[in-house]
Length: 301
Image 1 (cartoon, rainbow, N blue to C red):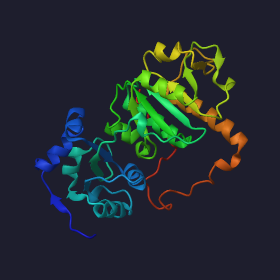
Image 2 (cartoon, rainbow, N blue to C red):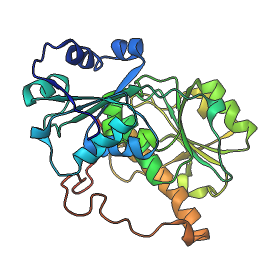
Image 3 (cartoon, one colour):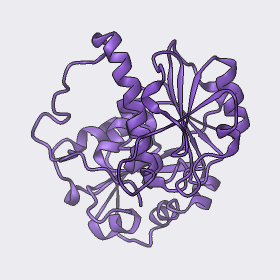
């Protein structure tokens, strides 16, 4: 590496205590910072141009051999490198099985005016999502479906929450995530001629009944009460449901979002199969255990 890391061996070190405080929202907001824990999450952040100002490493906890490369990328971008022992790393880690990497960097704050949407944009609107695991999974599905943006309305959970970063597997950094109010989001979509799907189990129409090949917004609501009347009673919105054949009348919000997104993907691929990239090689060259295994999903409930 170009510079020697600062070695820290005490959990009571002021730098470590300050990083540990960032696990709470009030301290994150006061510092204007977010935490990125994990190899995959940090790699995706760096790959998308994010520049942390601090990188904490614990070589004793590394799972593979590529961690030093990520650390070097952080250092070259101007990050301070703190190297710690396992007991110190556990002080700041939120994981049961940490992999020895935590970065600290600036928060992500985007407005609707920051969004540059392409033609035939696919957008997700998440209103009052309560659980970080659900919001993170929605981001991950949005990235996988090639969405142009995610709009978070009337937020209940903090998009800077480390559990959002984790459950999104770093896709918080791979697509624009804007925060706004429901009225502003609805007006924004109407002005741009979006087909707006308001997901509710009480709709008559199925989600497959709509043409989702043009500008399309998939709107989902909170885990407890679903979407507000601002969406459900708006003449600009098409109320749709996912057929439920069992005793439950609705799905987890992250699962429902994924199904709705992939109907848009299905329709678009049917028009032009060339939009689908070839199968991806193993992200870590086949010799690093930073992997999703069976691609399990943490829905957070």
